[in-house]
Length: 275
Image (cartoon, rainbow, N blue to C red; front, side, top):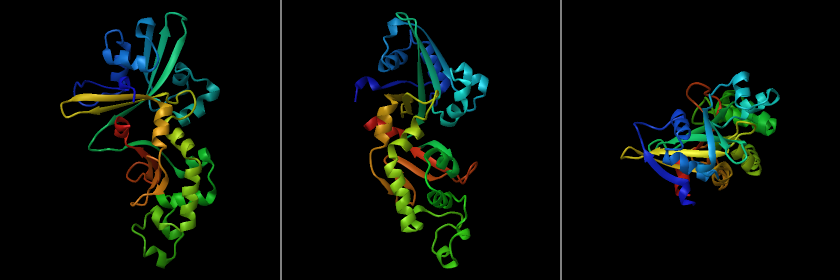
């Protein structure tokens, strides 16, 4: 690992959020961490004329999208695949060109471990990745979007843990093999869509901050291709709890509220610190 990709800073209570990161970039001339981040991104801070740093809202209307540099034609795709939380615009003195860097921010917690990075109904993922209807049916049974009593016999229902959904280790072997085959064949595509996204607000950088016991914050900043390759490492297997491990990514039923029958994808951002 490049030693410049990992560091620490003083925490002023709680986790650092998107607006805090924007303020640090805006104050890059005096902020040591912001200078290091810019160097990791390939910039020489002394040659920067000025920086604009913007927090990207969760919901974006068409006017805001245009302000973020997204064309009207690309609006729907951009919103569907948005992964960036922060947009940093760097204006260089030499060529007077505006460089745009999109950053995904993850706030990690040792006690929690995993962060949700994407959740959608099975049908939406089917539209994105084009898996077949039979795979979609069993994934919908996995999330509870289709109830088991609509498919299983009374004898089969008596053997499952939860009558609201099926775990992957409860579905027929052939269907389970098909799910594993699809996600194995398309593993890098799935991981990249989940972490990087597509379009004008896809993430180019991945910044993880972690609160330490002494109230300081450790951080790691890596380019998104490295992050995607890291989380894609490993096989696609059904976990002991009946969810799906896609490399270092976990696919499970969302549960709870809202969207209890959506698919949810999770990672442990702290794993990047030990890469």
